[in-house]
Image 1 (cartoon, rainbow, N blue to C red):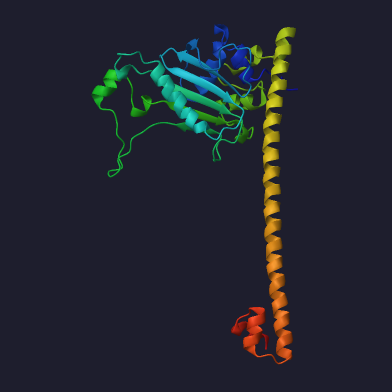
Image 2 (image 1 turned 45 degrees about the horizontal axis):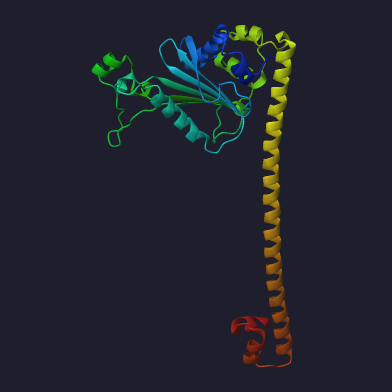
Length: 305
């Protein structure tokens, strides 16, 4: 029987802020970014502060690693059409917030944002996406790169290392197929389950620390309330989607019925004119009179003959 674990989003809000649990975030980020990540501290971000009213649709945590990079991890449940715009805004905001006034632009912090979304964001077949910035020549089609002086001064290898890097994990698109150690973490993000055979960095530590059964009564109650509220939020959203769909269907049927009646009425009038024209032809009326009383053209009346 698989061991049920605390969901990652609840852990972000209540457990992963403790320094003793940084290894869980370090393991996940090391696999995602394909480099060894060591977190020094967590910084304040918009929704990782304790508040009276919990935000169930979105949680985040902002970490600073041993290289001074800022790493924002965001979990989003509720669908937002402008979510891409918010990703762009969040990365730019971090860049500006952590550059002190008067400092040269070369002191910009490295910014990485990781977005774990539980809805159909965009249109694509994959479940893991990475965005980086590069400059391509319009005419020569070459890539604009750093010169040796810039590489030596800023200790970076590529222009993309200056700009924010964005990662998107589309949980709903993941089919529970574990192909590598990063997939082991994605499997956990979707199912809140870690298998004993998993080998990703620190993932078995997460299995031990996020065991629901190790919660005390107060923690378990808080967690259950969180899950109930999360289910409620999803139900409200699905209901709104369904009602919107049904309203659209009703409006479509109404328009279709109206159009059908109009077309039927038009067809009925035409059939009546044709029948009248046939009778007048039988009675020997001249075509000009038939045109006057039915409104049919000369060609239409000739066809009836």
